[in-house]
Image (cartoon, rainbow, N blue to C red):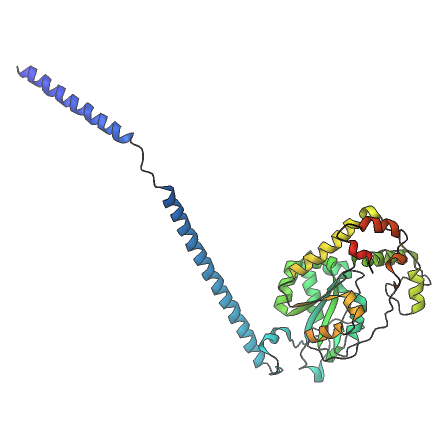
Amino acid sequence: MEEAGKERDVAVVVEDLSTSAKDVAIVSTKPAKRYPLALWIAILGLIMLVGVYIFSLSLKQNGMLFGLMQTNMIEKEREKPCHDPRIPDTEIPYVHYPTPNTYDREECACTGVRFFAILSMQRSGSGWVETLLNSHPNVSSNGEIFSVKPRRSNITAITKTLDKLYNLDWYSSAAKNECTAAVGLKWMLNQGLMKHHQEIIEYFNRRGVSAIFLLRRNLLQRYVSILANAHDSAMKQLNGTHKAHVHSKQEAEILAQYKPTIDQKTLITELKRSNKLAADALVSFKNTRHIVLYYEDVVNNRTKLMDVLDFLRMPKRKLFSRHVKIHTKRLRDHIDNWADVNNALTGTRFESFLND
């Protein structure tokens, strides 16, 4: 009897254990609780909102820091013995008092100096406009400095050259030395300017350099001038010498006799390339202090240069230049295969270039 009772007890225990195992199995195979999709979206949205808030705080702090730096700079300028109280606070970052290493500015030591750069493209009238500006007694534009390749080989060479120029330690025929009130250069877009545009923009903003864009609307006329200049560079039509700019009507007439034959297959590609280069430059430098000037506007209205003098805060003066325009006839009279060019551009976005 006792043995029978023990067997029953063992059976009950085994049955209980098997039941527990089944319960455990049932629990372990029960699917995990899933959160609704809307809850996950809400959590993700909350995380994004927190991120945006932190980012906005960072921007605000950076803006406050930049504003504080500007305020400190203005206060330091006010403490300098040469500070002119008539200069508005907004203009202070663009007024400088260089101390050249090679000479003493003497009585003009406290004459504020503006830094500028004429940003242009070859055969866009930059040489002519630069001579007009240089006829002002207080403006020194030192030419196409970065046409020399070693000076634009890297950003270090570029900034070193700019530092020397803006410290009034650069000598050229345009240098006004002591009484310079605006100093700059002529810089072509393809002379390292766009290649290193980010670093140069940072330099312009840090040093307070103002950009004067001088562009040409009619890129076909510019292309004709490029081809004619390249021809004279090879042939040297003026007594065996090449002149990019001329100072007499007779010289201009000799150079204008050459009429280039334009490759109509590559013409549109060339116009697109030039147009894109100018557009990219305007977009890249939009956050610098700048003015945009067009060659055609200056030709038709010389008072446009008064806008540049206002931009540089220079007193207005009558400006003059000895440069003589080379291509003065209708555009069709300066292109050997005008009919081909006309057919190539008619119906394209460059058709307007056919009209002088």
